[in-house]
Image (tube, rainbow, N blue to C red):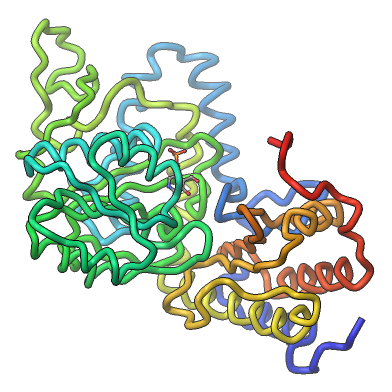
Length: 409
Ligand SMILES: Cc1ncc(COP(=O)(O)O)c(C=O)c1O
């Protein structure tokens, strides 16, 4: 193994960890017995200790003892409390945010409501957007996709009802210019609908400042809400009276427990609720949000720059000779909290890394995603992960693994 330049060595990582003002937040999370290096917080965040406690209480004391009384003893209020906290993370007013359903379902509801009120059919997006988003949007309207933002902006006409993009691209980590795209879309009378899944909790977001119309996002990635935690949606306050939830469920009714025969939507954003809130799936969310709010997204973003810059420097220094290249934007402010590395054997490398105690993830066809959740990832972990990858490549430890994902879930 080649020795890294001293300025990129492990001692630098150790010094960076000592200087890290967010280092204490690692203690807020569960590190299982295996103590893996976890670089997949962009897919599923780690378990916060307070979330674990809350989950245990929700199961044992609440479901176990209080049974159905749990609804009036607090369960019904949980989605609203979580939404108010997410509002602070995305620069929105509390009454503009709701926690419910999955990101895909929320995207469906908002895109559908938007086209209906605009009386337009066309939706613009990028071909590289998250596939579920494209499937949903294609089912709601006439979807037109583009390779670049410039091409998309060029295609804006008064036929377009919705422009829907991911703020941070799930694959490359590219961050799009929210202010510019929102403004250009609104000039032709279109609504803009952002997917914030890979941004929320790691990038300061400003729905109100940029006059964003609508947004959706996951809570199980950098917000650490847990597998299956419900998603959120945001609607600009002024639009709310004009929008209709295409799914008329009882929780969207003005009086859900009135059991009236006619559907009368709530006047608040709760009209975009559908059915029963997933109490157990969201039990860990509120404590998880508290950790992020306490750390502060500005500080998280600052550390994210340092972590990703360090990883990119290590890759350039030690891995390019093995054919690894950085597929994310090099300019930090144009990059989210994960770094995409391209290599023809990315899938084999992913499997080899996992076998050696480092968990990144893989995206077709050749991308290793290194998700560096700043709240619990250390600089030493980044150093050790890249050293492990170098060792795997130098000794061809990956060649014995499956070459394709066929048959693998
Ligand atoms: C950008 C993006 N949008 C949407 C989704 C899908 O979310 P859900 O499964 O909650 O519908 C994901 C899931 O990873 C995602 O990364």
